[in-house]
Image (cartoon, helix red, strand yellow):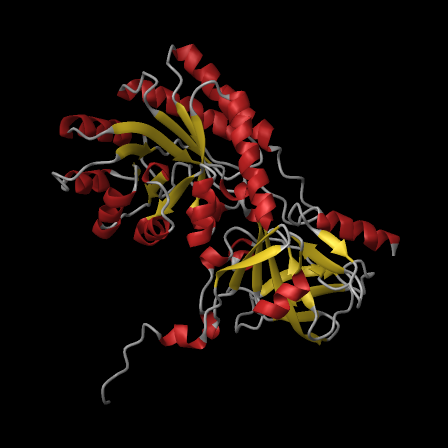
Length: 441
């Protein structure tokens, strides 16, 4: 019992800052943001995603304070909309002074509906369509240009007000992470190499385009600042070569700081140490080159929101003392299938119960890869019980699908004992809303 109680405490550390085990008439229950998770599941159904406002606020504040302490010039934080974006999340980030990185017309529309200030909106994308670019021209302060063809398409919008442009540099630096989430190595599809950046800078000058920054992104789940420091060195050399030598430009180092998903994972790197390492690399690199400090716009990825999210599922069946079958899986969280991502979980009711074995938590979908968690120590759970999976705030719902007719889950924001529905559950009717029936046969 004591060993499992310690394991439960270890798992609790992965949950949002406000997690508690609280007494209820039928036994102890998990609570987040002052809200009983079982009660939320009863009210909104499952699968259900719960986001804790306190945890989001703490992460944003930690980054902003670390930048203020470590970097002596202007700075800011960017939230990657691809982690999860809806109207409320866009509003939350914008109101806290965080810039929104929006990929394509859809995410830009979301930022517009949220009334995010234009000065806090960036337009990203590897292959921006004409519609993407038109939306970016209308609603973004900065367009991050991925390639020369895109730059030429932008120049064709003559006579329209042109946002500031950053060029996306591919610094040829690999990071130790899953191959599918590396983005800055030599063979990456993202960004431009040195020669294309130089050509793009010349094109901007020749066509009167407002080149004001360089961006790079190395990948996700980064735990070591050394590759980012190496990429900064190469980017500062590039900035000097293309004439970005005064302080009126922006350097945006992108790369998602790692988070722990499982109690056996190494702890997440401290935010202040990560920021300090990035800031020091820029300050020292500029000093060696005699460059004025650029604005530092940091894009730290999932560490802003991943731990704020909890996914709640309902157990449907226990098969062969091995398979714990729940009502969600790869349709709302494809990361285990895509990347072999490792998760853990706790029962919502009596989370400190001793384990009764190692269980494979699987979903209802017609794929053998629809396994959320492999071999997790849990008590024997019965149909109707709820299971809570922590660190579910990033790259779940944004990657979700309607596979097997799945309807995307409801999303609830909790803070100070209050819960607000910020995204409704899809209905069966939503699945056919876009359909056009055949007339005759």
